[in-house]
Amino acid sequence: MSTFTVVTQQHPDRAVITVCGEMDLETCPELAQAASVIALDSKPLYLDLSGVSFMDSSGLNLLLLLHQRLRGEGSRLALTGLQPHVVRLLQVTGTYALFSADIPTVVGADAALTV
Image (tube, rainbow, N blue to C red; front, top):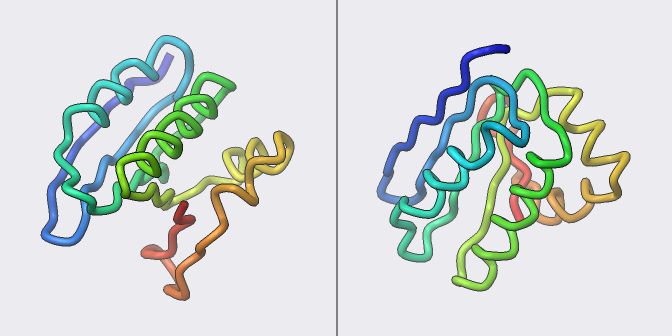
């Protein structure tokens, strides 16, 4: 099993949570806790998933719950650093379109899927 880390940062225009390791049933509660206590004040939440080595249905479920919660709070979720296996999971489950509804025009490391 790999080490799982969650690092939160506050910026004037957004909050960022950087995730490293496997997003699964065992580790998702830690990410959910970090997302629940970070102050957004209607700013978007960026999830940097560039360090995610594996994601199962628990990780996908957490993304969907975060999306729904943030929409309800008048905010949005931006996924950054998507690895091919995460993109594939989103495509196979039919959720990629949900997470790519408002893709910014920024290219490169700052590009994000925003919902």
